[in-house]
Amino acid sequence: MGMTGTAAAIMVLFGGQDLDGWTTIAGEWMAREGAMVCRAAPASIRSTYESDGFVLEFEYRRSGKGTNRLAVHSKMTTGGPVLLLTPRGVTKREAGWSWTPAVPEDEWIGVRVEADPDLLHAAARAGGKEISDVRIPVDRGSRGFIRFEATEPGIEIRDVKVRELNFTPMFDGKTLDGWEIVRPKDPDDPGWVIENGVVRCRGRRSSWLRTLRTYDNFVLRLEYQLPPRGNSGIFLRAPIEGRVSRIGLEIQLLDDVADRGRIKPAQHTGSIYDGIAPEIRVPAPVNEWNAIEVLCDGKHIRTTLNGIELYDADLEQDAEKDTNRHRRPLATRRTVGFIGLQDHSSPVGFRNVRIREMR
Image (cartoon, rainbow, N blue to C red; front, side, top):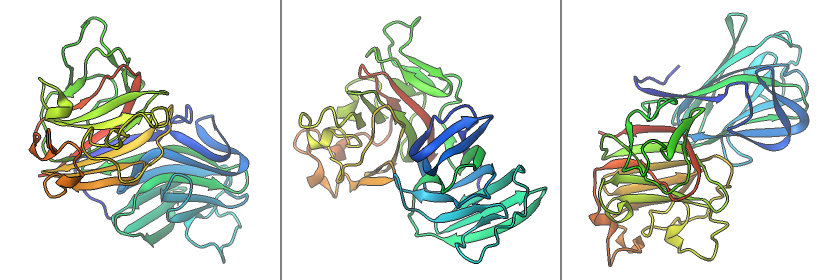
């Protein structure tokens, strides 16, 4: 199958313990004996993980009742190319398919889906052999979440993981190696910790967390979780000294609902803080994981929140969009610096932080 590359970020989306990282849209799902199980249908559940190109792997069984589907590049609740998960493997056909099980209901069927820029390639295996292979054209630039659907209860899904080629994880999931807490107030009781693979800010406004090395041009992806009235940010091309949001760039992370009517457009979630406002408002619920991507390529900045592009701006050519252009123009900001996570007195979580550097 087609994707090649050396570096890769591997993320476990469902490891069997709980449904953290998944949002139930309809019906009832539960984690039971290491599997994601549909208990009441019609049912739909989506990942909080969102991307464009990746390799998805998982196993399923007990798909003989009703119609079971996998949607890739899904929006928040609907959409995206759809594959059927059947006892005979993965198919794109709604009609003319024999429902006589080719694989016993208790046997697991392994699936591998490669999402390339213009093609989905899905293959299924059972009993040590390939049982189906299907290709679906997709629109170039398509992206979104992973969604499972069931019209009847019963299907079980396990070992769901994705791999993004040419992306590198920025945390090892256990330590803050490669990062530094900038001037912590109490080094013996730091405001940043890692718990179960999640980078957590305790919300003490003690200091911010930065990379040990600098970056210039890159694509940064991560998931974040804010509490009600929460406030945080992602620092880009940041200095160590001085106010980052005035020297480098800050991508705002905020509970927009709680602060509605009290903030400027260029202070909403996803904005270049006090600079460029989102061109569209995208829901980013508190107490849930939200996916954000930022591309920095010279003066070109593009931010995507939960699969929706907020803006695609050139800081020089689109200077009229910069609300700070008469004071601290974004076009004059640093083009190289540290990547950082802000402590703004809110307990916030970050996970699946990965980067692709652009040469």
